[in-house]
Length: 438
Image 1 (cartoon, rainbow, N blue to C red):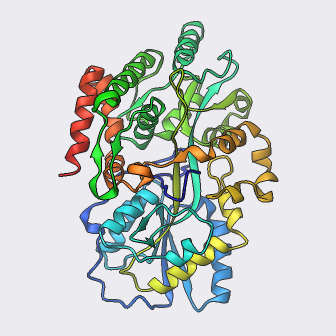
Image 2 (image 1 turned 180 degrees about the vertical axis):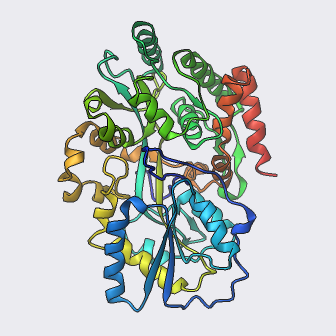
Image 3 (image 1 turned 90 degrees about the vertical axis):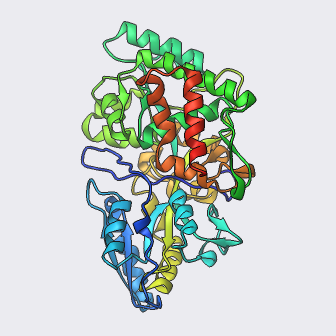
C-alpha cells in the first residue's frame, strides 16, 4: 500500500442480491454542531453499514464492554439505505452518532466541515495507514482496503488480455463468436462508473489533479494529460461496441450480467463477484479469472484504486471519549482479523503485516483463489485512493467531492450516451471539476 496517505470511497452494502449499493455526497444537514453534550456520556452510538458482519462486531463490542465502563448501541443501516441517509436522520433528530464506519474520503469531508474529533493516538501509535492527517492530527482509523479488479471468463477469453489492444481483440472475438457481450463499459452517476473511468485514466498516466491540499489544480486538460485523456475516452468508446448498455449500472448490475452470462468481463471490487456468484452459480466460479485493469502498451501501473474504510469519531455526540476508546479497542482486538475476513477476497487488512498474517494465509476462501491474493500482494505498493491524489499523495478534497458526485462516471455518459466526442468529453469533465473549486 503506497504510503500512509490513502483513502477510499463511501459505498458498499451487500444486499440479498449480492448488490453493492453506493450513494453520493453529504448535505449541509450533516453538521450537528448545535449539540451541547460534553462528550463524556457512557453510551456510545455507533453507525455502521456492516450488518453482514454483525456477529463478529457484537463479539468485539462484548469484549469492550467487559473491560470498559461504556455500552455500545449499534445502528446498522437497512437495505437500500446509505450511511449518509441514516446519518442525516440521526443528526436532524438531535442524536448524532459518536462513531461511524465510513470511508477515508468521507472522513476528510467531515473533518473539513468541522465535525470530527482527532483520534491521533489510535492511528499514530499503531502501524495503520494515516490517510486523513490534517496539521499533524489523525481523523480516520482504517480497518480494511478493497482494491478494484477485473474479472473475465477464462473459457471464452484465450488468455489474460491486460493491454488495451488485447482486450479489444479478445472482447471483439468473444462478442462475435458467442451469444454474449465481451466487455462491460459502465457510465453514469454511479460509484462503479466513477471508479472505472478514473482508473482507466490512471492506467494511461493521466494526471487528473495536482497541487498541495490547499491549492488543488485540475490538470486533466493540460498538455500531455489532455492528449492521454482523449486517447482513454476513445478506447472506452471503442470498447463500448462490445458491451451492453451499462449506463447507470452499479456493482451488483455488472455482477448480475456476469452471472447471467450476458457479459464475459466486468470491473468490480476485489473478489466480490466470486462471493456473490458462488451462492447462485457455483458452476461458473471456476470459469472466472481476475486481472489488473486494462492498460496501454508500454505503460506501468502507478496507481491502483483501493477503497479504504474504517472509523471516524464525531465531535458533537454524547460519548466522544468513549467512541475514541472503542475505535482504539476495535483496531487492537484479537477478533479484528475475524472482522476483516468476514468477506474474504472482497476486503483485505489495511497493512502488509495483516496481509501476510496466518489468519489470511489459512482462510479457506482465500486459499481457493490464489490468483486474487497474487494480484493483491504484487500490486500492494500501487494501491491508492481518490483522496490521495494531490501532490505527493496529499489529501485532495476536490477529488473527494468529485467522487461524491461521480463526475468521472458522468463524463462517460456524456461520451457514450450524450454523443460528445472524446475531446468534448475532456473539456466537459475539466469544466465540471473546476466548478467544484468555486
